[in-house]
Length: 349
Image 1 (cartoon, helix red, strand yellow):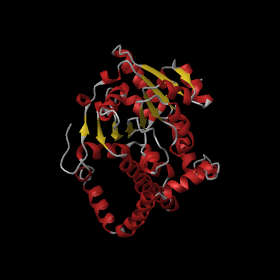
Image 2 (cartoon, helix red, strand yellow):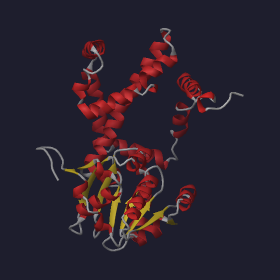
Image 3 (cartoon, one colour):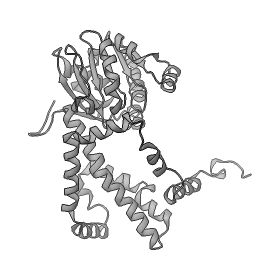
Image 4 (tube, rainbow, N blue to C red):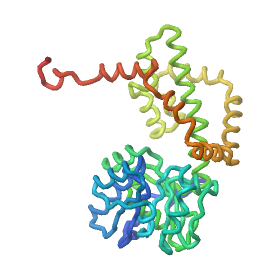
Protein backbone atom coordinates (compact mmCIF):
# COMPACT_ATOMS: atom_id res chain seq x y z
CA UNK A 1 0.00 0.00 0.00
CA UNK A 2 1.45 3.35 -0.98
CA UNK A 3 0.63 7.02 -1.44
CA UNK A 4 2.49 10.18 -2.23
CA UNK A 5 2.18 12.96 0.30
CA UNK A 6 -1.28 14.50 0.12
CA UNK A 7 -2.69 11.74 -2.10
CA UNK A 8 -4.95 8.83 -1.08
CA UNK A 9 -3.46 5.39 -0.58
CA UNK A 10 -3.27 3.30 -3.74
CA UNK A 11 -3.90 -0.44 -3.53
CA UNK A 12 -2.85 -3.22 -5.89
CA UNK A 13 -3.39 -7.00 -6.11
CA UNK A 14 -1.00 -7.79 -3.28
CA UNK A 15 -3.15 -5.71 -0.94
CA UNK A 16 -6.31 -7.78 -1.37
CA UNK A 17 -6.57 -11.33 -0.01
CA UNK A 18 -9.54 -13.14 -1.56
CA UNK A 19 -9.26 -15.79 1.18
CA UNK A 20 -11.01 -13.32 3.50
CA UNK A 21 -14.22 -14.13 1.61
CA UNK A 22 -13.89 -17.89 2.14
CA UNK A 23 -16.93 -19.53 3.67
CA UNK A 24 -19.07 -16.41 3.25
CA UNK A 25 -22.22 -15.57 1.33
CA UNK A 26 -21.89 -12.51 -0.90
CA UNK A 27 -25.18 -10.96 -2.03
CA UNK A 28 -25.54 -8.68 -5.02
CA UNK A 29 -28.44 -6.34 -4.18
CA UNK A 30 -29.37 -5.45 -7.74
CA UNK A 31 -28.50 -7.01 -11.09
CA UNK A 32 -28.36 -4.03 -13.41
CA UNK A 33 -25.62 -2.25 -15.34
CA UNK A 34 -23.16 -2.71 -12.47
CA UNK A 35 -24.53 -5.72 -10.61
CA UNK A 36 -24.41 -8.06 -13.58
CA UNK A 37 -20.72 -7.64 -14.55
CA UNK A 38 -19.58 -7.64 -10.92
CA UNK A 39 -21.52 -10.84 -10.21
CA UNK A 40 -20.02 -12.52 -13.28
CA UNK A 41 -16.50 -11.38 -12.37
CA UNK A 42 -16.84 -12.61 -8.78
CA UNK A 43 -18.18 -15.97 -9.92
CA UNK A 44 -15.32 -16.45 -12.38
CA UNK A 45 -12.76 -15.69 -9.67
CA UNK A 46 -14.41 -17.99 -7.15
CA UNK A 47 -14.78 -20.86 -9.60
CA UNK A 48 -11.27 -20.52 -11.04
CA UNK A 49 -9.71 -20.73 -7.59
CA UNK A 50 -12.22 -23.27 -6.26
CA UNK A 51 -12.96 -20.87 -3.40
CA UNK A 52 -15.78 -21.72 -0.98
CA UNK A 53 -17.80 -18.55 -1.52
CA UNK A 54 -21.54 -18.53 -2.17
CA UNK A 55 -22.90 -15.85 -4.52
CA UNK A 56 -26.57 -14.89 -4.57
CA UNK A 57 -28.51 -12.14 -6.32
CA UNK A 58 -31.22 -10.07 -4.70
CA UNK A 59 -33.63 -8.39 -7.09
CA UNK A 60 -37.24 -7.23 -6.98
CA UNK A 61 -37.18 -6.27 -10.65
CA UNK A 62 -38.52 -9.13 -12.75
CA UNK A 63 -36.47 -8.49 -15.95
CA UNK A 64 -33.27 -8.29 -13.86
CA UNK A 65 -34.27 -11.35 -11.83
CA UNK A 66 -34.88 -13.30 -15.03
CA UNK A 67 -31.45 -12.36 -16.41
CA UNK A 68 -29.79 -13.39 -13.14
CA UNK A 69 -31.57 -16.75 -13.06
CA UNK A 70 -30.74 -17.38 -16.72
CA UNK A 71 -27.10 -16.67 -15.88
CA UNK A 72 -27.27 -19.42 -13.26
CA UNK A 73 -27.40 -17.33 -10.07
CA UNK A 74 -29.48 -18.24 -7.04
CA UNK A 75 -31.93 -15.30 -7.15
CA UNK A 76 -34.23 -14.15 -4.36
CA UNK A 77 -35.82 -10.89 -3.21
CA UNK A 78 -33.65 -8.00 -2.03
CA UNK A 79 -34.67 -8.49 1.59
CA UNK A 80 -34.14 -12.25 1.52
CA UNK A 81 -30.70 -11.82 -0.07
CA UNK A 82 -29.74 -9.37 2.68
CA UNK A 83 -30.87 -11.87 5.33
CA UNK A 84 -28.51 -14.53 3.94
CA UNK A 85 -25.51 -12.28 3.31
CA UNK A 86 -22.23 -11.99 5.15
CA UNK A 87 -21.39 -9.24 2.66
CA UNK A 88 -24.12 -7.37 0.80
CA UNK A 89 -23.35 -5.11 -2.16
CA UNK A 90 -25.79 -2.19 -2.46
CA UNK A 91 -26.19 -1.79 -6.23
CA UNK A 92 -29.58 -0.07 -6.47
CA UNK A 93 -29.75 3.36 -8.19
CA UNK A 94 -28.58 6.19 -5.94
CA UNK A 95 -31.94 7.91 -5.68
CA UNK A 96 -33.79 4.66 -4.88
CA UNK A 97 -31.68 3.59 -1.91
CA UNK A 98 -33.29 5.98 0.57
CA UNK A 99 -36.67 4.25 0.19
CA UNK A 100 -35.40 0.65 0.01
CA UNK A 101 -32.55 0.58 2.52
CA UNK A 102 -34.53 0.37 5.78
CA UNK A 103 -36.13 -2.96 4.82
CA UNK A 104 -32.78 -4.30 3.62
CA UNK A 105 -30.90 -3.21 6.75
CA UNK A 106 -33.53 -4.75 9.06
CA UNK A 107 -32.85 -8.13 7.48
CA UNK A 108 -29.04 -7.98 7.65
CA UNK A 109 -27.33 -10.46 9.91
CA UNK A 110 -25.50 -9.13 12.96
CA UNK A 111 -21.96 -8.30 11.86
CA UNK A 112 -22.65 -8.52 8.12
CA UNK A 113 -20.85 -6.02 5.89
CA UNK A 114 -22.74 -3.63 3.63
CA UNK A 115 -20.80 -2.40 0.60
CA UNK A 116 -21.86 0.65 -1.42
CA UNK A 117 -20.89 1.01 -5.07
CA UNK A 118 -21.44 4.78 -4.81
CA UNK A 119 -20.93 7.17 -1.92
CA UNK A 120 -24.06 9.17 -2.75
CA UNK A 121 -26.58 7.80 -0.24
CA UNK A 122 -24.01 7.79 2.57
CA UNK A 123 -22.68 11.26 1.78
CA UNK A 124 -26.11 12.89 1.96
CA UNK A 125 -27.42 10.92 4.93
CA UNK A 126 -30.08 9.10 2.94
CA UNK A 127 -29.36 5.75 4.60
CA UNK A 128 -28.59 4.62 8.15
CA UNK A 129 -26.75 1.29 8.16
CA UNK A 130 -26.86 -0.88 11.32
CA UNK A 131 -24.19 0.20 13.86
CA UNK A 132 -22.79 -3.32 14.13
CA UNK A 133 -22.04 -3.60 10.40
CA UNK A 134 -18.94 -2.70 8.46
CA UNK A 135 -19.99 0.06 6.05
CA UNK A 136 -17.68 -0.13 3.06
CA UNK A 137 -17.16 1.58 -0.30
CA UNK A 138 -16.26 -0.22 -3.52
CA UNK A 139 -16.94 2.17 -6.40
CA UNK A 140 -15.70 1.01 -9.83
CA UNK A 141 -14.68 3.84 -12.18
CA UNK A 142 -15.84 2.05 -15.33
CA UNK A 143 -19.13 1.28 -17.03
CA UNK A 144 -20.51 -2.24 -16.73
CA UNK A 145 -19.42 -3.51 -20.14
CA UNK A 146 -15.87 -2.27 -19.59
CA UNK A 147 -15.76 -3.83 -16.10
CA UNK A 148 -16.55 -7.20 -17.59
CA UNK A 149 -14.34 -6.93 -20.66
CA UNK A 150 -11.31 -5.64 -18.76
CA UNK A 151 -11.72 -8.49 -16.30
CA UNK A 152 -11.80 -11.02 -19.14
CA UNK A 153 -8.75 -9.35 -20.72
CA UNK A 154 -6.85 -9.53 -17.43
CA UNK A 155 -6.41 -5.75 -17.27
CA UNK A 156 -8.51 -4.80 -14.26
CA UNK A 157 -10.13 -1.41 -13.76
CA UNK A 158 -9.83 1.56 -11.43
CA UNK A 159 -12.02 1.78 -8.33
CA UNK A 160 -12.40 3.75 -5.11
CA UNK A 161 -12.44 1.82 -1.84
CA UNK A 162 -12.89 2.78 1.78
CA UNK A 163 -14.20 1.80 5.20
CA UNK A 164 -16.80 4.33 6.35
CA UNK A 165 -17.52 2.40 9.54
CA UNK A 166 -15.16 -0.37 10.62
CA UNK A 167 -17.18 -2.32 13.18
CA UNK A 168 -15.14 -5.51 12.74
CA UNK A 169 -11.68 -3.97 12.66
CA UNK A 170 -11.23 -5.73 9.30
CA UNK A 171 -13.42 -3.49 7.14
CA UNK A 172 -10.71 -2.23 4.79
CA UNK A 173 -9.26 -5.71 4.37
CA UNK A 174 -12.71 -7.07 3.57
CA UNK A 175 -13.41 -4.53 0.86
CA UNK A 176 -9.95 -5.01 -0.61
CA UNK A 177 -10.64 -8.75 -0.77
CA UNK A 178 -13.86 -7.97 -2.65
CA UNK A 179 -12.08 -5.54 -5.01
CA UNK A 180 -9.46 -8.19 -5.74
CA UNK A 181 -12.07 -10.88 -6.42
CA UNK A 182 -14.02 -8.53 -8.71
CA UNK A 183 -10.85 -7.89 -10.74
CA UNK A 184 -10.27 -4.23 -9.89
CA UNK A 185 -6.93 -4.55 -8.11
CA UNK A 186 -5.22 -5.83 -11.25
CA UNK A 187 -5.31 -2.13 -12.17
CA UNK A 188 -5.66 -0.49 -8.77
CA UNK A 189 -7.88 1.23 -6.22
CA UNK A 190 -7.68 4.58 -4.45
CA UNK A 191 -8.82 5.00 -0.86
CA UNK A 192 -11.76 7.41 -0.66
CA UNK A 193 -14.49 8.45 1.73
CA UNK A 194 -18.09 8.31 0.59
CA UNK A 195 -18.32 12.10 0.64
CA UNK A 196 -15.18 12.46 -1.49
CA UNK A 197 -16.39 9.84 -3.98
CA UNK A 198 -19.81 11.42 -4.35
CA UNK A 199 -18.39 14.92 -4.83
CA UNK A 200 -15.79 13.76 -7.36
CA UNK A 201 -18.26 11.70 -9.37
CA UNK A 202 -21.00 14.34 -9.52
CA UNK A 203 -18.62 17.25 -10.06
CA UNK A 204 -16.80 15.76 -13.05
CA UNK A 205 -20.09 14.60 -14.59
CA UNK A 206 -21.78 17.98 -14.18
CA UNK A 207 -18.86 20.37 -14.65
CA UNK A 208 -16.47 18.81 -17.14
CA UNK A 209 -19.08 16.56 -18.75
CA UNK A 210 -21.54 19.36 -19.45
CA UNK A 211 -18.87 21.62 -21.00
CA UNK A 212 -17.53 18.75 -23.08
CA UNK A 213 -21.01 17.91 -24.38
CA UNK A 214 -21.80 21.55 -25.10
CA UNK A 215 -18.48 22.01 -26.92
CA UNK A 216 -19.12 18.94 -29.07
CA UNK A 217 -22.62 20.07 -30.05
CA UNK A 218 -21.49 23.63 -30.76
CA UNK A 219 -18.59 22.42 -32.90
CA UNK A 220 -20.91 20.21 -34.90
CA UNK A 221 -23.59 22.84 -35.47
CA UNK A 222 -21.18 25.68 -36.31
CA UNK A 223 -19.34 23.38 -38.70
CA UNK A 224 -22.47 22.20 -40.49
CA UNK A 225 -23.75 25.80 -40.75
CA UNK A 226 -20.50 26.63 -42.53
CA UNK A 227 -20.95 23.77 -44.98
CA UNK A 228 -18.57 21.21 -43.48
CA UNK A 229 -19.78 17.62 -44.02
CA UNK A 230 -21.64 16.24 -40.97
CA UNK A 231 -19.95 12.84 -41.19
CA UNK A 232 -16.52 14.43 -41.43
CA UNK A 233 -17.23 16.49 -38.33
CA UNK A 234 -18.34 13.45 -36.32
CA UNK A 235 -15.30 11.54 -37.55
CA UNK A 236 -13.02 14.28 -36.23
CA UNK A 237 -14.97 14.53 -32.98
CA UNK A 238 -15.30 10.85 -31.99
CA UNK A 239 -16.42 8.35 -34.66
CA UNK A 240 -12.90 7.59 -35.89
CA UNK A 241 -11.75 6.69 -32.37
CA UNK A 242 -8.96 9.29 -32.49
CA UNK A 243 -10.47 11.27 -29.61
CA UNK A 244 -10.80 8.23 -27.35
CA UNK A 245 -7.21 7.32 -28.20
CA UNK A 246 -6.19 10.86 -27.24
CA UNK A 247 -7.74 10.38 -23.79
CA UNK A 248 -6.02 7.00 -23.49
CA UNK A 249 -2.74 8.67 -24.35
CA UNK A 250 -3.34 11.27 -21.62
CA UNK A 251 -3.68 8.40 -19.15
CA UNK A 252 -0.48 6.76 -20.41
CA UNK A 253 1.80 9.74 -20.98
CA UNK A 254 0.25 12.61 -19.01
CA UNK A 255 -2.08 15.42 -20.01
CA UNK A 256 0.52 18.04 -20.97
CA UNK A 257 3.00 15.73 -22.77
CA UNK A 258 0.14 14.27 -24.83
CA UNK A 259 -0.66 17.72 -26.25
CA UNK A 260 2.65 17.67 -28.13
CA UNK A 261 2.08 14.34 -29.86
CA UNK A 262 -0.31 15.48 -32.61
CA UNK A 263 1.99 17.62 -34.72
CA UNK A 264 2.90 21.29 -34.41
CA UNK A 265 -0.20 22.58 -36.17
CA UNK A 266 -2.47 20.84 -33.66
CA UNK A 267 -0.40 21.96 -30.67
CA UNK A 268 -0.06 25.55 -31.91
CA UNK A 269 -3.72 25.89 -32.83
CA UNK A 270 -4.96 24.31 -29.62
CA UNK A 271 -2.72 26.44 -27.42
CA UNK A 272 -3.53 29.76 -29.06
CA UNK A 273 -7.28 29.13 -29.11
CA UNK A 274 -7.30 27.89 -25.52
CA UNK A 275 -5.68 31.14 -24.40
CA UNK A 276 -8.61 33.10 -25.86
CA UNK A 277 -11.26 31.19 -23.88
CA UNK A 278 -12.69 32.91 -20.81
CA UNK A 279 -11.63 30.27 -18.34
CA UNK A 280 -12.61 32.36 -15.35
CA UNK A 281 -16.21 32.44 -16.55
CA UNK A 282 -16.03 28.68 -17.01
CA UNK A 283 -14.49 28.25 -13.56
CA UNK A 284 -17.14 30.41 -11.93
CA UNK A 285 -19.89 28.23 -13.37
CA UNK A 286 -18.05 25.13 -12.16
CA UNK A 287 -17.71 26.60 -8.65
CA UNK A 288 -21.47 27.03 -8.60
CA UNK A 289 -21.94 23.41 -9.63
CA UNK A 290 -19.60 22.20 -6.89
CA UNK A 291 -21.31 24.37 -4.28
CA UNK A 292 -24.69 22.84 -5.14
CA UNK A 293 -23.23 19.33 -4.95
CA UNK A 294 -21.54 19.90 -1.60
CA UNK A 295 -24.52 21.67 -0.06
CA UNK A 296 -26.85 18.82 -0.97
CA UNK A 297 -28.97 20.98 -3.29
CA UNK A 298 -28.41 18.67 -6.25
CA UNK A 299 -29.18 15.60 -4.14
CA UNK A 300 -32.46 17.23 -3.04
CA UNK A 301 -33.34 17.95 -6.67
CA UNK A 302 -32.58 14.36 -7.68
CA UNK A 303 -34.70 12.94 -4.83
CA UNK A 304 -37.56 15.26 -5.81
CA UNK A 305 -37.26 14.05 -9.41
CA UNK A 306 -37.43 10.41 -8.25
CA UNK A 307 -40.38 10.94 -5.90
CA UNK A 308 -42.29 12.82 -8.62
CA UNK A 309 -42.00 9.85 -10.98
CA UNK A 310 -39.07 11.14 -13.07
CA UNK A 311 -40.93 13.93 -14.92
CA UNK A 312 -37.73 14.91 -16.77
CA UNK A 313 -37.24 11.43 -18.19
CA UNK A 314 -39.47 11.88 -21.28
CA UNK A 315 -37.56 15.06 -22.16
CA UNK A 316 -34.22 13.26 -21.78
CA UNK A 317 -35.44 10.44 -24.02
CA UNK A 318 -36.55 13.01 -26.60
CA UNK A 319 -33.16 14.71 -26.50
CA UNK A 320 -31.31 11.44 -27.08
CA UNK A 321 -33.77 10.15 -29.69
CA UNK A 322 -32.70 9.18 -33.18
CA UNK A 323 -34.59 11.84 -35.13
CA UNK A 324 -31.80 14.41 -35.36
CA UNK A 325 -28.93 15.07 -37.74
CA UNK A 326 -26.25 13.66 -35.42
CA UNK A 327 -28.09 10.37 -34.84
CA UNK A 328 -28.94 10.04 -38.54
CA UNK A 329 -25.33 10.69 -39.51
CA UNK A 330 -24.12 8.09 -37.01
CA UNK A 331 -26.64 5.59 -38.40
CA UNK A 332 -25.49 6.27 -41.96
CA UNK A 333 -21.88 5.69 -40.92
CA UNK A 334 -22.67 2.40 -39.17
CA UNK A 335 -24.41 1.23 -42.33
CA UNK A 336 -21.43 2.23 -44.47
CA UNK A 337 -18.98 0.57 -42.07
CA UNK A 338 -20.79 -2.76 -41.99
CA UNK A 339 -18.64 -5.58 -43.43
CA UNK A 340 -19.69 -6.28 -47.00
CA UNK A 341 -20.72 -9.75 -48.13
CA UNK A 342 -17.67 -10.00 -50.37
CA UNK A 343 -15.39 -9.07 -47.45
CA UNK A 344 -16.75 -12.12 -45.61
CA UNK A 345 -15.99 -14.35 -48.58
CA UNK A 346 -19.60 -14.46 -49.71
CA UNK A 347 -20.93 -13.78 -53.15
CA UNK A 348 -23.01 -10.62 -53.39
CA UNK A 349 -26.74 -11.26 -53.84
